[in-house]
Image (cartoon, rainbow, N blue to C red; front, side, top):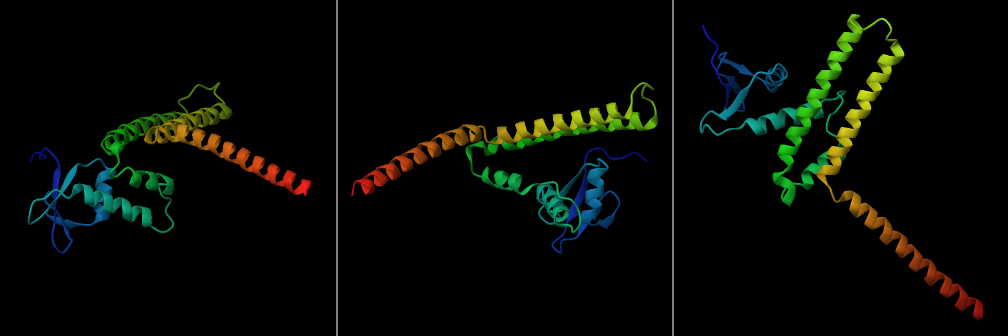
Length: 192
């Protein structure tokens, strides 16, 4: 029996149940999460209208994973706020492709890091490489990833640095004006 080509179809019924057409069984959001982690491609469609619901179901999976007690979240509040801010913005059209590119780059770096760790833990590294060198390599990789993410956030709002600098200059100018006004008042009070 040959495996069907293309993504598996998951049908979502009005009662919110999800039906896996490949295995002819009902599945949960947790099952779909496992499928994603295993690299299995699927689409979710409304059983009645055949409308593609994949995006909303994947978003629901993320929402539930972020809400789990005791589990570390992946989406910082600042990121979520900034992302919400792009809805309806002129940059909205660029954000999806940018995020997709960024996550692919992160996945690539993650895989390289995983390979380095596997090599170092399996003993396939040269004997002259000490644990300090391994830790240094891990720290260098972490710094590179942090730089990548900082650059990514700057690209989400390329004018933020300019706005912050302009805001600082305006704040200093306002403080100078306030100081001059206070000095004028003090000198007037001193003359009385």
